Length: 351
Image (cartoon, rainbow, N blue to C red):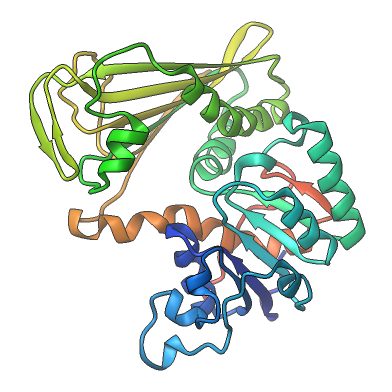
């Protein structure tokens, strides 16, 4: 049981969309003290953490100034670093761990140590041993949906068939033309799916599912990734621009973990700008659907009861909040790369 009468000294690493939400939540947390802030942008260096977190008035003056120096952060007296940088900086993480700071990260590289690059795993474990620290990857997905929620659902069964996690993301309200059209490929002419996109998701989600497969005694001997595209049936206007009929209106990537040739765990990322597409993918509102097939099958639907006006402000918390809530458990854990399977249940502290 985690102690509730102490304060954890926390460093926030990076202030992107998710990082800035985490920064604000740490500042406002009744059991946490912000002691440091690392930023990647030179124009943020020297600014107060409260300002960068979007706080106003007296709350914007925390006294913690942003720095771009790893050495300055490593020298701080801190219990944990919330590492939310885009991309994994292995040198920085090793330095932080070796300096005696635990790390909780939204980077997906640490979900299942057995699938890590052996050289990187060895470096991380050496740094953890040197600092007496631990590191843990989590978030909403992968993390909550693929691990923390999957475990109790599987606990209802004695004979397992297949667990399927469908993630639905309606991105039609996102006013980010470059992201949707140039990077993700919506409104592009129909063509074969770029397998490199599927392989990218396979890394994070395949390792997350493999962690669970190992824990339930059905270790994965194969992880596959398959991507599909479906065309919009009609012309439509979305927040980011126009999507002509016949161009990409939805995409689905399926990550499957197999044990002795049989699928045992499956994750499907369903991303779309319209549900009026050529394929019958049973698209629904944003959220998750988790289905277990076995001797005690269950189906759980999770949606987000948030208005369209509030949705953009709501979504960063899905990824940012679980890492914050995990800090006490990670700080109390044995040194090394920790997983959802070997950590205690993450319980938030509200007071």
